[in-house]
Length: 354
Ligand SMILES: [Zn+2]
Image (cartoon, rainbow, N blue to C red; front, side, top):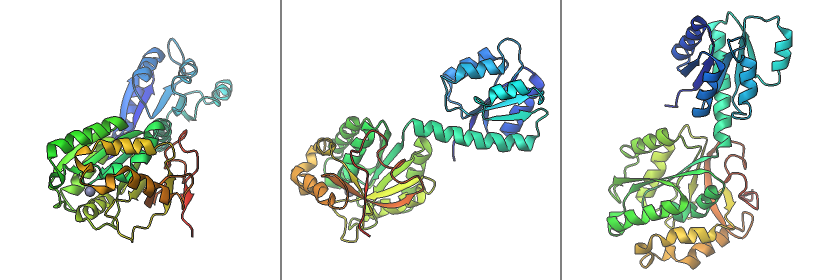
């Protein structure tokens, strides 16, 4: 379930306002706010995120033109549709061509209204979300799985201003005191500024179907990730494979899904993307240090091993240290939406040798 588009209708004629609202709510499933004048519209625009706006031109007080001029600084990406009963008012249309995205002449046909508003609201939402950065969801079977697999990449996402969510399916009872491991997971999430979902599935008994799929679907619905990182299917640990399978089912509408390497990955782990994490290896070490209760029993958490692994993978990517990924879905522009966005990498992601 995606969140309905949120649209603002600015119209002083209550009959027209009601018609537009009714069409957009009933036929397009949108959430619609109505403002009867430009001042009220401006207040709503300051307090809410809209995906699109449709406005009348001639209204008592400030006109639709004034409103557009006023909000362009506030909401530069907002798609704006202008409704006018005066198709012949060429001067207004000319003036508006630069600021409005579309004109509709009254009376407006319901089907046309739905079609145009849906297209523009989709564009408005995409622009708004991509300007706000990616939402990254990292899914692991146990505490410390995602930090080992993509700790450097998550730190790079954080530095790039992206939102990070960690979903850990079990508290790892078999691998230590669950209370310790909960605190450790929280400490690591804090370092990343990440939101943590810590679930309670039984360690070593994680199912590839429900409840695992439902848990992931619930989190996906709640946070709307644009990128998901999860376990590889090429892994000796049955929990890791189960989480991989459940993730591929539950994230089928997520634009980008990629699998990270675990210490239990098999030689079949076959990464096709190598993301430089230069500048973030220290952050990765610090994340892993949060899991102190494990580090004296787990050789794979040792700093030299972690650094050597990242160093090794750089032979396929750029820079001096990389994290490898098996990309299973990437519908966004490669290297743009999916790499730790903007500002981050000193090197573009490398490609596997063909
Ligand atoms: Zn694990």
